[in-house]
Image: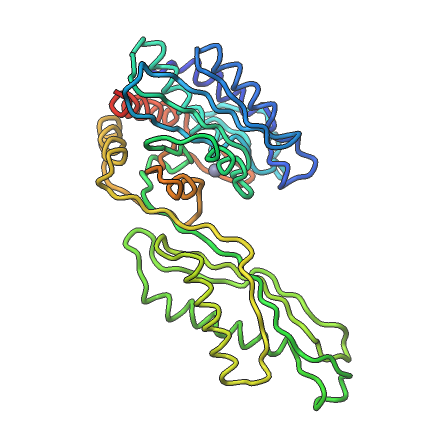
Length: 381
Ligand SMILES: [Zn+2]
């Protein structure tokens, strides 16, 4: 049984703690306060509590419910940072209304975080003995570049993992990855009255933009993943130009490419090289180079993995539904999967991740806790 009073009090306490990611807002305090609060809570429950310091304001909390030995280890991973509360009336003042808890991070993802803790809480209170360990990996910085899960993986591993990001009770077994690409188109600066001497880098960049649209509108439409649909590409920023009467000598375009799970960084490099080559073959004055500044691969886990089957079965028992979905956005799950840990994502219902009104449904936080408890008991036996 999940103790609803403890659940509501814990969720409300967590929303009260401002844990805005300091990389997104320089005035933010970071994740130390919430890590300490949770560390105390979990230590009192009898878990072994460890911290990984990442910087002055930031640390991961890794709390382990030790089994008797000989069983499999399951990791429940949740990020403790949130995006900024700007634009919200009272971001850190939790309000309960019609079965919903409102506040920054309620949905993304203090709700799912509380589900994982309450699953462990209920196992301890019911005195169930596990053979394997349960690792609560409560990490920083998922909302920026995932420093937390990267640091976590230097020291910790598990046989499987569940991430409790808000999925509206869907079981996510695939999500897209992404690449950030910086392209510099070079021209030749010249006085605006001398067209024979200048090469207009911005006009040349236009050719690149046209090709991006072709990729998006035609080529990508031929590649369809059953859960994720097609890859995508878009221009994010553009910069260039020296003055009204000058041919611009450069144009810098940053683009984002969302990838399917099978695409790796080499595939993206090849795609970009081919694209620039193609434009160059039709225009000898086109001169551009690119650089992949950041890459995260996508996630795909088989429906036949034990952890996937157990989550599906447990959810069926609690909610009477089954089946799997994919998501277009990226999550820490890909980092865990790349480290060889089969990982699946399931979290509570709600609305307003990163938006000005954010809430999680309290009954759903409880249901996800029940599902997780069931999975832990079977997986860690
Ligand atoms: Zn999240």
